[in-house]
Amino acid sequence: MMKTWLFCEMAAVGFVLFSFVGSGALAEESKGSTALTIYSTAGPGAVPAELYKPGLQQSSYGAQWRRQIPGYAIVKQERDVDFAEPRLTIRFSDVASEIEPTTVRFSSLTDPSGTRVLEQNYEFDLVSTQKLMEKFLDREITVEKAHGDKLDTYTGKLLSADGGIVLQNPSGGVQVISGYSNVRFPELPGGLITKPTLVWDVVTAKPGVHETRVTYETKAMTWWADYNIVFAPGADANSGVLDIGAWVSIINQSGATFPEAKLKLIAGDVQRAPQPRGGVRSPRGRVAMAEMKSMDGGFEEKSFFEYHLYTLGRKTTLPNNSTKQIELFPAARNVPCEKVMVYYGQAGAYYGVFASPMVDRNFGLQSNKKVDVYLRFKNEKEGGMGMPLPSGRIRVSKLDAADNSLEFIGEDTIDHTPKDETVLIKLGSAFDVVGERRQVAFDVDSRRETMTETVEIKLRNHKDEKVKVIVKENLYRWTNWEITQKSHNFEKIDSRTIHLPVEIEKDGEAIVTYAVNYSW
Image 1 (tube, rainbow, N blue to C red):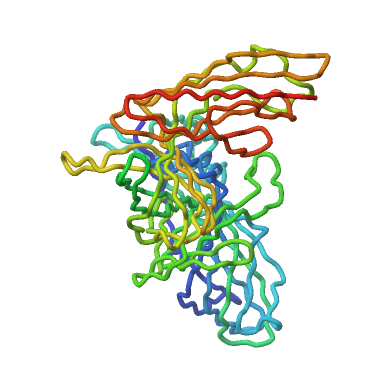
Image 2: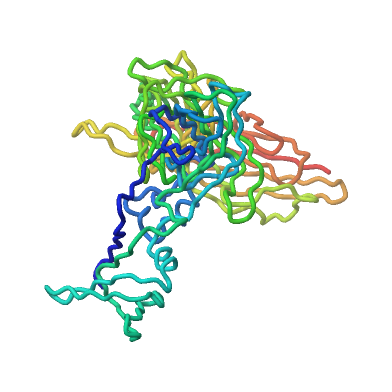
């Protein structure tokens, strides 16, 4: 089927993005300002590429994806309105199609106490092929169909448009037309509009030009933070430095373009009322940013209630159906970090709270061989950081000196992190360092209500340098425990977790043993 175009033959029909109508006359309008505050309900690193893939917004699945955009925005637009009469009807068409109508608020900044909104309407019966066909049932239209270079024209009363156009010609005959190229309508039927429109019936005690503000919430907008880190090794295998850069990505699929807008992002967990099933499911809004003033109009951070507010120092345009990236803060250089290796031989098993002592000797004996690798740094001013970090995804690269190129070595996510807190980034598992865990002895004395277990962990280092490994162990069999024997000192992390730091020489092996006594 050829592509279908809809044409309306109308006498001097025009539309304006922002118009004010009072007593049948067009009120004076001047362009004002737009401000956006964007909230995100996305978990760090959890926004799939499908939500901002080019062209998806125009596909048949566009509306479905827009409903899944994990965030929202508060839009504030200011305009001058000439109240030539005490009562005025104002039509506002420059509005996002994903607007939440119940959040709309119109106010006069010039005379807030003497200007009242009597009625407010949200009109969203938009022009579409199907709507036009429905409006012109039993009315005359003209259909054009191409046959090679020839164009046939059919005029008649529209009887149906389901699966093809059915026309009744003036003589009473019926024609079924499929594969048509053009449809001509004599006019745009009443009630249909080209854009969602807000309509207010407003009265004022002070006629004249008013500065007004329109505020509303729109769905299908969100933002998230991405951190790009370059790792450089330090003086030994367990240290290094980081260059840390951060970017904000913003999705706008709200149905409106916001030119030259003042942009704010809110960082924190903002509580929202539960939504009915089928609506936005996340109850929280996330936001955060960096404590610095940028000479190039970058983001400036400040505390705001119990959250953090980030204001862009310059205006920016957010086109509809677009993804924009803006630098969050200038890159921090030479941030000290520590490379941490962790062996968790019990990984993958369930170690919850049991109702009674776990006396099954075979429970939890599976052994994980992988040694995980982390980078750890302190988010403090002395190390070149010291700013609130929004939740987001962290990607880490390392320079290959052979060709001076950066190679990706791992990624992780972080939650909102205040200044002076520690950031831990998991990169993956070590290739040349492996572990092995086994149970050496196990005994239960039911009469004395005690249980003892002896565990042995072997760690082998095949690197040509010494490494440090933290052995993590869960003492899961019961809440009352005591370490009775140990080969290495340990640190109690919580009521059921201990860490045993171990150093392993190059091409060497370390053996960690401990015995634990449970009682109840």
